[in-house]
Picture 1 (cartoon, rainbow, N blue to C red):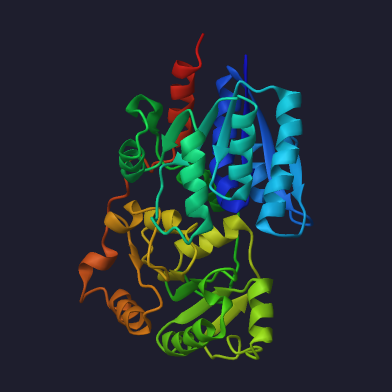
Picture 2: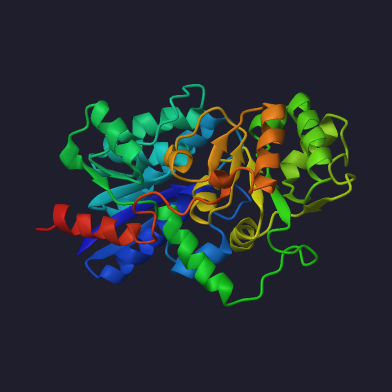
Length: 371
């Protein structure tokens, strides 16, 4: 029986890892072992995701100290080396593109362990983005590349990766979405009880992203004031973003806007239900773009680039940057679908974003790892 080590750090990566772990466990030919990295005081995986895929007691945990990204990378590599030497896996499957993924890939390569990159080949071509550098380095070290969309195939082949090492499996995030929503539909989850489905806009902001400065926060304040005159706005507010607002002297400037409902960050499953029932999503987070596309929720992404072009080419995603007028115009179009039917009537999803990616990956592993 082959032993496989699956590694992840942070929510986007665990959404890739969880359904793959579940599929490997059910296959019976593998012994999957999990390594999760998380900052001190932070749960390495959400309780709903762990419960859904049976990950409760399957993990090694590497705790990341507070410090610089380099210090955290060293901690990942040190912890990963101990785990890899102890477990002696036949293959290390690296999920995601954060520093935990980078550290796991480097460590495995240094220990001469074969590496499989999960969600490989994604590129934003924005070298100022730390995760873009990580993606390139991880893919350079990987022996096998499992890609979620056609752009991943094209990027890897163009970078010189042999095509027999590239496997188009589909998007594991959609596997997690399907499983979590099946569970959620069996339960009565009401995050904002006084707001009706498709009668609100959802706003998700990354405190470490575009809205770390006062000027972007001022712009968002103006946008919220205008949007909320047309539709209710639901905004989960991260504690880090609240602290930034206090630092910039903005206090409760969002919560005092009539029509804006500020809520605590809900569980991931509750957030998915919020997204599904929303009229539109306004965000600077990449991690919800796939889910919005599959659930046919128009998404306005406050970025200039995306590492998932499939969400733009065939989904409902549009890159708007910090162009305030463009955002207002697009929101008007979404709220008035009769004028621009093409914006809200997309019926297709990207190829193989069907909730069966994990099974395809396991089928490939059966072939390439078979004795």
